[in-house]
Image (cartoon, rainbow, N blue to C red):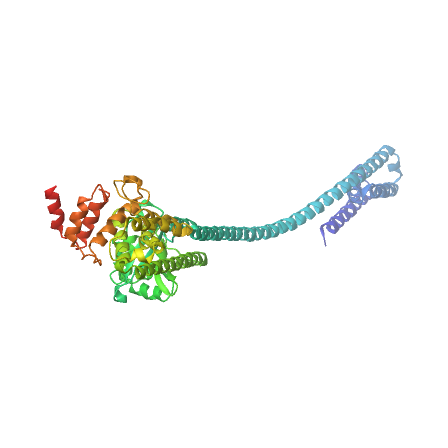
Length: 534
């Protein structure tokens, strides 16, 4: 039984009890008390009206009034003599019934509204719970989606950064290839090449090594040609500029590079000897690419990370391989140029019997002297080429004059003195030899201005021609000729010192003679005696 049914039963029992009490009191002749009971009988009317509304209250009131009247009649006629009590009871019951019914109607409306509100609140709670569930679900979905989008965005950023990085490297390689093609020799663009490569690959050090042949492969010399570093404190940390692979503990690297393999090592995974070298150099990881000029292993180029242990990817490996290929091709091209120049020089020596071996000797001495004077690699290349071709203009001199056993006549000398101009005319159309032209064209000029072909004087004579003039005369004096025997180094030095300031640059000649002393060709006492005489 629910609450509503329990209320109806309670009210019915109350009504029955009240009427029963009223009947008993009236029947036993207690009219006054009967009036009280009649009044009490209104209570069930109130209850019925309260529960069933206005209509129910009026029906209950009429029923109560009728019952009241019947009971009064049954109690005796004397009770009818008191109509005021009857009217009073009737009024009370009707009033109570109507009031209770009205209040009940109002209450019912209120309860209905309350139930509607409760239902609405329940519905709202339900909807709110549903909404909260959906919001939580949607929030989780959005959070998951946001995480996915964030990860995708990061991946795209990384991919974009990778594309930009690789694009920068490709652009750098294209620039290196273009600059290399424009250069007259492979040495000239190397500093910019290493700098561009280091900046593009974001490393702290880039180095170019050249192999120097030796009698034993185990004693192959590792020579540092050029390096670029991102910070000054990392400069000049290699120690000796020339060292054998064996002494450096790099025989394993030598074998791999000679076989055309890439060397990639970190500080943690190398042999103890190599680890010592890398610690000394503060190198945490290194990538080395061999350079081949044709089939010949020429050297290597390396990227080194100093600030972090770096994992080398395809971008760095491809960039280093591209630069190694460009260098190898350019070195091979230059080697072919050198072989061509050597062929020209050999052809000239075959034609001019008295100068056999002269070209190779003066070339070696001129490069050594230029190195002492501080010339850079590109300038050394020009000096080597110019020395190889210094007498190429003699190809334009007739054999009868070139190989005449006796002294030349004045007219023959005029023709012979034209060979620098012949050299100029022969070499000028060859673009890569422009910077080597000063030696073939001006090595017969004299410091006092009495040389040929243009009678240049002093510092107006190109510096390469001035240094080569010293080397050329030295070799001519110390070599056998058909018309005389070779002079001793001391005699040649004494003669040349007398020509200092007239034929030779007074600053270059002493350096050259000191070089010959260091090489063990000229006794040191020869220079000491000259200084004592001076």
